[in-house]
Length: 186
Length: 226
Image 1 (cartoon, rainbow over the protein chains, first blue to last red):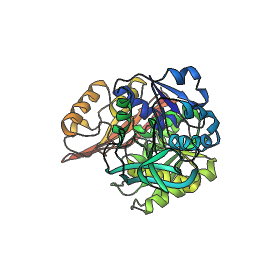
Image 2: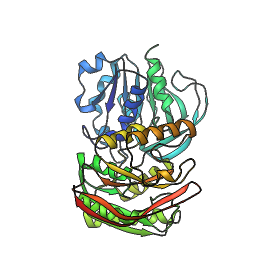
Image 3: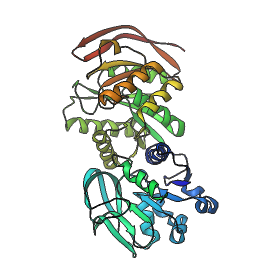
Image 4: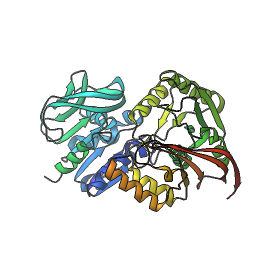
């Protein structure tokens, strides 16, 4: 079961349709079992019974997740695949000692994949939809997969299947979520 | 949270309004009336009748004119949203965007500049599932405009129901159209639904059609008890 974590400012907010449901829809279409849970309603049972976890993004004006990083301390020691999207990537960065820094971007932009990974595949350029006020600094133990220092588009933990992407794969790049889903079966 | 819904009277803005009313308080419907029938940003057929839907739902409407010129219409939209902040105290804006990155990114930027929340509760929704949801929840939606091959004149004025959704699905498979008209293939108008206190009855309308482009222009309509 894949845990799809809603990072929006409150459970069952209007934003969930925009940032959580499209990710869940990818799971549904691929026939994968999933469960949606809000970040404030996570339980150890849910976390440890899952096969993998996706931390979803949230609205541009919502920065509550950044003030609740303690809710995500379980990420540090969890030995399961994790994908953080936008706010989710920022949470992963913060948990591992990186910083959340102002870096506003809205709209479609070219993204340079610079390192081959199971999630994003071979180095090449793709186009991705950005919707964020903040980016991240690279935490210790992580490698840049796309983008560059100062504008990290995607990162991966050097030893564990933990990924972060700052753009929104649910828009024009659903294959990334599908590929994460497929990684769980390997 | 007090919200304003960008509102054209088409199915997407009405359904976005329905979702916003479920979680928050919709204090006004913001209708930008464009003089440009080919506006990239704003739904134009029958937008003047959106006031009737606002009345049917029972939420105040703020209308704002624009010449519909690219660039200037964004400034007009921004002014309309700022006006809704002043008049209705809105803290956020809701749109019915589904796939259009062009529209969504522009509204997001305006919201950021005005320090408003931006909600897109239909974003990336499966278009056929969405049409079925509209029907199953009791929305009465008619097609008021067709703007692409292979839509012939028989589509104008047709009600979206199960058989029509099947036809749209077949057209999607054959011609790669967006079944909910997100690419501008069709435009719609909503006559009734679960958030309506009264329904809309069209008394007189003129149908025009020429070379895969056609419209149903409403000339007289009224609110009636449901």
